[in-house]
Length: 175
Image (cartoon, rainbow, N blue to C red; front, side, top):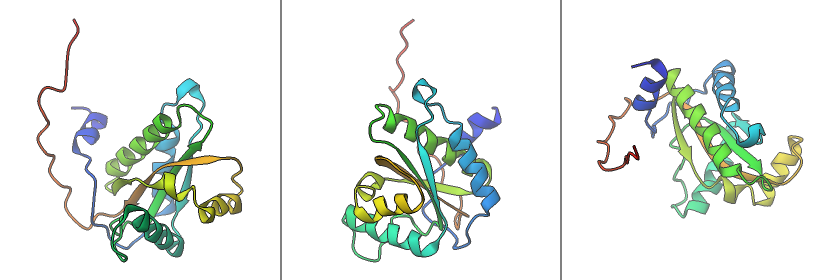
């Protein structure tokens, strides 16, 4: 099995991370993989906001927790110290598809580097909030953006979980 397919088969969502933040070089490699994701019409519309500031990371986690309806104190990012948040222009018809491919590429890249990752939703709701619109403006990001998702990344504080059995009856051939 080639290395790309092997990574696809072995990658799992990780739900226990060490507090140590991956290096900027590691995060840049993951981000680069995301930037090479396929995109509709080659538009390359999605952007990535890399969050390693732990105060901001904790604010995002607390807001995400509220949006998700969990009890205060729950960390929906499972302790992952870095977030790679993917957004795409609200007016781009393929925003969700293109942004999803970016996150998928980043999760595979993280796994191939021995790091753990997990896709966390509710970025859409976060970036409808004034605080996060201000964050984008403070970063020099103009326009109307929709949050697609978070790729939470870090060093695993667990073993890579085994794959659940694949469901039967999901492939149909039209030969």
